[in-house]
Structure formats: structure tokens, C-alpha cells
Amino acid sequence: MRNFDGLNRSDFAWQHDGGQAAIWLLRDTGLTSNGAVGPNVGPSWHLEGSGDFNADGRGDFLWQSDNGTPAIWLMNGMNVVSMGAAGSFNPGPSWQIKDTGDFNGDGKSDILWQGSDGTPAIWLMDGTNAVTVGAHWSPCKAALTLFLSASDPKISEEFW
Image (cartoon, rainbow, N blue to C red; front, side, top):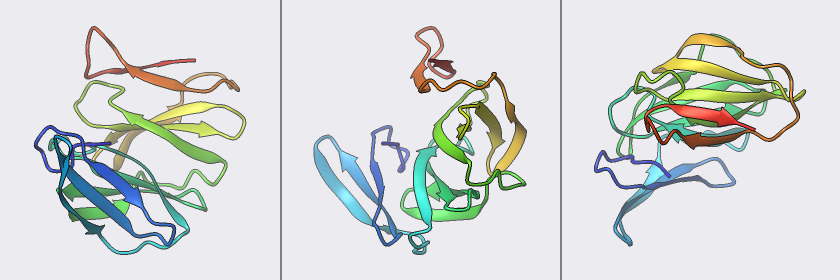
């Protein structure tokens, strides 16, 4: 769930088995607007999550293809403003997107990855550009759990 329309309420993003993404804009317990978003990317692309990658106060889509390529759609409500590859390289299918969070406190979402050997990594993002890329811990097989710090809700912390 992410705030896609900038009204500080959670909305739903989902993807049909055939690849088409959609958003449901919500108010309290009611649906105010819904519909398909962007082009149908097909079943080889997977909506892995959402975050605010450009710090505009609206949710953006984070995708990963079967071959590992990550992509971001910068959104304004139900409209795709910009779409492109996330970062400058494909980490390959052995790396999976696990979550998003603001790991450096700059107000923009970053990407948490996990390799097939358990190695976690973070890409610090600025829009669709990866500012810093790298593994930050030794390999582990434990599940990664994220939660927001009670002392600073803008910065996510990792514990496992």
C-alpha cells in the first residue's frame, strides 16, 4: 500500500497475471477511483513494490523482470510521468528485490535486494538513478525484516 495521489492515505497497487498494473485510490473505506496504469508490461515483468523514489509525496512503481532488470515508473496519481531502468546495470536473476525504504534519510526510497546466496544489498536511489550500489553485510540465510525506527520515522532499519 502506498499513497499514490498525494492525499496522505494509503492506496492499492496491483498487477494482473497478464502484466497490466492498476491502482485503486481509497478514501476511508471507500474506493474513489480505479483503473489500469501505464502500458501492459506482460507477464515477464513483476510489480515488486512501490516507494517514493523522487520525493514528490506520491508512490512510484518498482518492477523487476524475469531476467533481473529493475525498472521504476515515476507516478502522479494514476498517471505514469516517467519510466526507465533503475540503476545503470542488470544485477541478474539471482538477485531479487525484497523491499523499499529510505535507508539514508534523504526523503527518497531506496531498494533492498537479496542474492540467491542470502547476501543483502542496498541501492541508494535518486529517482531512477542508483547513487550507491553494494552489498553491505556478509552473506546470511535469515529472512530480512524491515521496520521504521521509532526515533526517526524517515529512516528504515534492517534487523534479522
